[in-house]
Length: 126
Image (cartoon, rainbow, N blue to C red; front, side, top):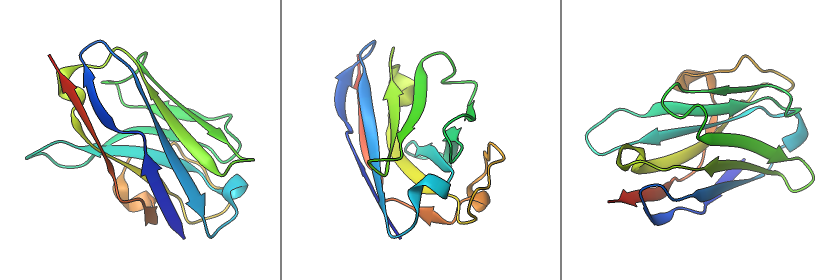
């Protein structure tokens, strides 16, 4: 199973970015997905999750109302639309996949995910 994250970059505060994560090696439409991030000197933290169908989503309080997770099962891709970016959103963003098929709990902890991408850097400047 491979997860390839992309879309990171440098953006000014208040701007937007869209991250993508392409999944290969398993049936994407049966796989719940999540995004996490890790800022320098901090532990990795949950950002958002989406069920295998796309009908269920969950967000960290810090991004609620600003970030939107979505998926396109025809393209084996999960997205994270990030709007109104803040300095504190600067981090390496990771996509992750749940190994169990057709399983969604709105998972917010790392141990509930079995596969991880390599991360993409998001830097928000003032």
